[in-house]
Amino acid sequence: MSTIYNDIIHNKQRGQKLLAVLLDPDKILLEEIPNVIEKINYSMVTHIFVGGSDVEPDKTHQLVALVKSKTVLPVILFPGDIAQLTNAADALLLLSLISGRNPDYIIGKHVEAIPFLKSSSLEIISTAYLLIENGKKTSVEQVSKTQPLKRSNTDAIVNTALAGEYLGLKLIYLEAGSGATHPIDAHIIQTLR
Image (cartoon, rainbow, N blue to C red; front, side, top):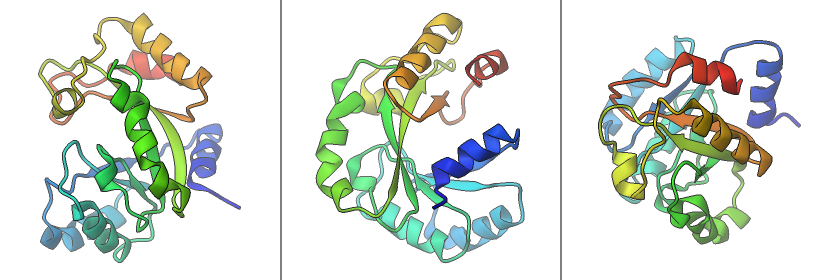
């Protein structure tokens, strides 16, 4: 049986690039979705992530259901909180914010989500989430009450990512934040490949 995670790994092994676009339920109106998805369907996008730092309950479900009705692309939850979980999606990036030291975002929120996840049909993909400084304070910092890793400290970034891998987390997500002044440096991405 093919899974989204297996497809990601298969494409990586073949040297194929993948492109995900993130739709934040608090930053996009449902009325805009048909037009946005039409553009996505005619682009190089391979996956659609849905989530945000601070989303009202049920907004994620409404957005995912509408997106799923307009595309065959996999829709993957990228939740900032357990209130964003919905079985309407195809998969869930189970994010562990290992760059921070707030236990709620390393394991606490995951424990709270277990009653939902146990009965869920979602493909669950454990993901190391690393927040990297970008020159300004992000909503992730505010919500999670954590500090980003210094973008100049490549060793700390690489070691944190490797710790996540050694813990069994399947994917690594590097985050500079929306509207980042400084994107993630290419050499960091290359080092982690």
